[in-house]
Length: 155
Image 1 (cartoon, rainbow, N blue to C red):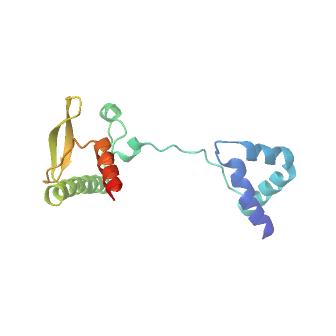
Image 2 (cartoon, rainbow, N blue to C red):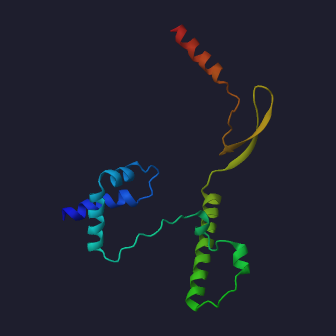
């Protein structure tokens, strides 16, 4: 039991793609018998264990088709009824998610308005105002600090 526990702690340190390889190089140079013992325990516990290469996941893997260009150029095999049903259900799910998000923002979402804002130099710019309240954008922080300082002096 101790051998399994030790191997379970040693092997991930050796095989994990860590950004700094100090631990794995220290273990392999200072304790080679410990590493060989951990590999023997792994071989005895799981004789057909393979170390798979690490996979990289991208945002495009979440999309239904990885590349539209590759999708158009590939010869298509006929889909089974189960695959067609799965594709239809996936597009229905995406459509419901989009419609639900738009509906939520139209009914309960905040009201967003574009407002022209002038700074102290007279330059105008656009800002987004949330809600129906009127917002004052030209408040100077230095003026606020002076007003607070004057109130303390009078007390």
